[in-house]
Image: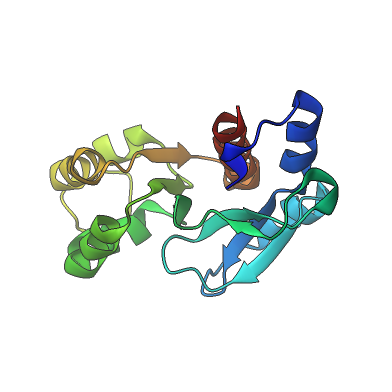
Length: 176
């Protein structure tokens, strides 16, 4: 594995630059994220992921003795929800399926909620009938039960920055 080898800071920087974001093939309404990756020359690849919407891999690099591609989709992923309405639907109408999906993942998962703030749940500023106290309680319960923190992204234009940043620092901490 990559973390079993001692890399210099310069080599770590080179590995991190090669980080390629994996985008689940079923992911929808993510043009803003893919456009960000393209604009910033962040490599990405569409691939069916068993969990989450985003993860990453490090491609083979003979100059760094990386003899094969290393995939991290079993270790870390981001599950993106485009709105509180989407999360609300997952928690009310599809709760069993959603909870099963969260419970079986044994890596580090983050729930990214776009176009919302925490206060929007507290104030009931979403377009469903899902009870705001139940909404709030479910998110917190899932955080502690399944160790899945949630991150709000009020301006979805920053989701690509967040995704890349999470994977960059996950990898850097793994390699140091």
